[in-house]
Length: 404
Image (cartoon, rainbow, N blue to C red):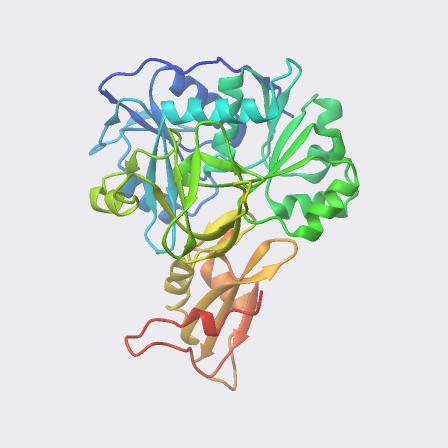
């Protein structure tokens, strides 16, 4: 098990332009590389080392980093485009379309997010964060940022392993951990002593009330965080904004956010950056919420089609595009269905080319593995005669989604 990583504290000074370093390494080594890059005022974009090579190549082409660091060492990348000074990270997010976007997050935002969590949780000298989330998602990367700003210790696991997480408070003296609902469910099912952590932060998907009740019944202190890649991760804790952030409801009760932790821009996409904000500077989330008199916001629905499974954003269109070439599939639509373990599971509605010998779930998952990450692969297959669509050809997902 890797040892703790020291947190160097405040962020470095920056120049007018900076390198963008793509990091493709296992988590413990990636965490060390991220800290070193931040010390040198470089921005990082972390890619999943387990992703299919074709997917990684597409992301490199999209993000155009200036350098690449993998197990072969560091090298320049031809055609790389530097980032503006003060950029700390570029995080990829699929949003609701098949084409991912690069979210430019700043050192100022890193400091604000870290300070907001420190104000909410306090910073006892003995605190130590456990990282068992992927660093190529903002939820994992943000833990490194929080530890950096608060000056507490950090332990990075190679992945999520129930026994390792359960024993960490005792063997590694970790006190804080971020988990997605799937992980909380698995730890509870295994009887893990999660109450040994001082705080458990959940995010990535709504924590089912029944799972939260089970966790709190063990004595665990659970904080439900809501945020986006565009907000440096958690910006609302149990519905209330962290210090320096603000939340309001806009038209049709869309949740709008503001604060220094909000993204600078979508990388190399000025038009989409402009569209992401209201005219007076609030970030549009695409989520619908309700706000109580005390200011706490509860997310009740999404106006986007994004499926969040195991804390990972899944683009239905990306899955549909990957499966549409299957020789035994005539048409396909993908939606999310409620799932106690995963938050949502990916469901593929398929019109088989030959109804007498329809494709199976195993066939679909095997076919998709070349171009899709594991979380994007369907966990349920429903055979149908037709996919409901508008006259313009758009899928009517609301007619496929099961009741919530």
